[in-house]
Each structure stands twice: as structure tokens, then as C-alpha cells.
Image (cartoon, rainbow, N blue to C red; front, top):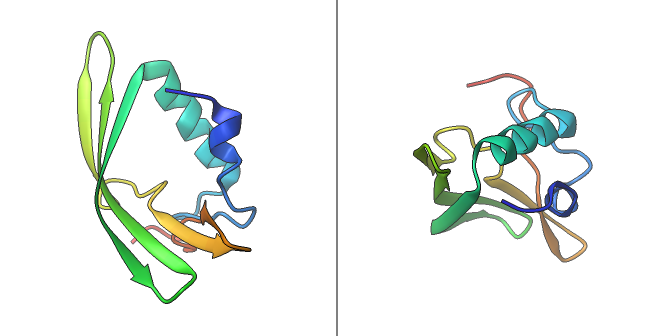
Length: 101
């Protein structure tokens, strides 16, 4: 699935999603990398909220030798769906909420 450090380079320092901070996101990435060998992301559409915020609506397909899973995001977890533009670069930002909705 890739390099966890390379993925975390694309995460904003103020990442917050449903009460989870960057540490939790790192754990989620490591868990998924241990479970699956392949990730395919199909971008369905991107919803822009002004010039600095966006929500990516995707279908994420995870595959391994023993299982395949598909998630519609951000509806399933949204860990990677909420983006913020910082100094011209889009970064994963989370939904900035301390509680799950």
C-alpha cells in the first residue's frame, strides 16, 4: 500500500477528525497496511467549500489475498476525505470535530 511516512507528509499538523489526531491516523494507516496489500481510490467528485477547504468523495477498495473491502468516503470513516489548502498545497485535514457525528 505504500510508505506511511510519505502519506503522513500530506497530513496537516492540525489534523483532527472525529476526535482523532495525527497519531490515530498513523495507527489507522499502519493497521490497513498490515491487513491489505493494495488500495485503489476512485474519486467520485470533490466538493469545494471556498478556496481553502474541500471534501473528496471517493470509493476506496482495499485488497489482500484473503479479502476485499470497499468503502464509500467520507460516509464510512472519512479519515482522508477532508482537505485544507495551506500555502498552495492540499493537505489531509480531518473534519475538525472533537466528537463523532
